[in-house]
Length: 243
Length: 218
Image (tube, rainbow over all chains, first blue to last red; front, top):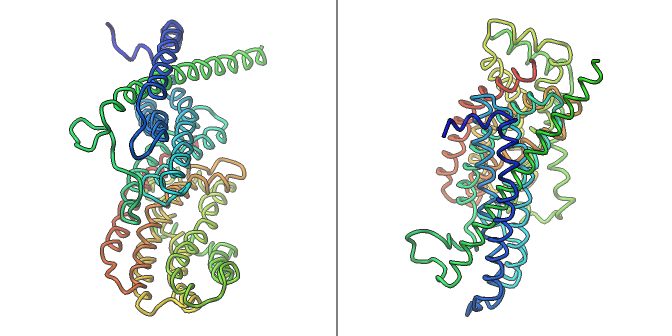
């Protein structure tokens, strides 16, 4: 096994990801469908929440992946800033819309869940509000990618924005805690807490989280490949015009 | 260094638009509030502190794209970048000049507008203190946003989209200070946190702004 940095070579990345993509996609579909079917049809209804509890199998994984996607963008942006690997910057660009959609799914399923449970679609609660801000960060990040014409400058600027945005996202998270105490329950999954969801819900939930993770991986690989192809196309067109 | 600061201040004072505009916006914003939510003084008193913070934030936002745009257009920014002064220091000075020409007048005007909105007497010192300690963070964050978007045509709207999420913590702590102060509660903790955010922003963001400027000047 050689250095992981060899995958920074676009050709190497394309070859490996092309071979990997069908497997990852297939596995993602398998785990996701399996986890969702298990969760929706083979778990009992919660004694207080009834069948609405089943939104958890979409809501929690989407929320986890929304923050994980931003974290992945942070890491790839750092790699771009430090080592100037183009694939890394393009992976960050490719991940942003996926993360935004996950955030939106989290917000939407949360609203649908909150309506029967709390009697309201929206509450200015720390978790909800910080997620809305995360959504705005995704929008700004994507808008900046689109606005800057030079691709390298765009990668640099969005990387700086991602780093600064992360710092402020973390501060916002804690600032909001001061500002308002909320309705949203605490963490429902952890290794040691006593307030975990019951095992009968937890196993399909973990399966769904795995499925969402694989889905994210497949989509990022797919979109990164598209970005690389688009850039090659642009280079070819530029070559044509020069000739 | 002093020369650059003096030049920016003189430009803001003489060139019109920058200096008076955000102050006028702040005044109009405050005057529009009673039309929007009704003129009952009890209700106004309840929300005055938060509204004044929001108005100050929007007024500050309005003037952000002037920080670098004019210097970018006439080439002054290239001269600044090639001068012996580090670009980090230049960004910090730009933020300082922006604060002196927009933030400081807003702080000075806030008590009068507080009277208009029927802010309780106990709230005035907290409002002034929170604005005085919080608006430098708005200028520093805004300078970073302006540096990111300096090369983009009509970047003003994008600038707002980028900067507003970054303004959230400052707004929360600043408005919390003013609101708690107006209710007669102790507001020292959020005031200290506001000051902390300002110090952090002033320490870190000039570097981020300078690196964004270097990319845009490349």
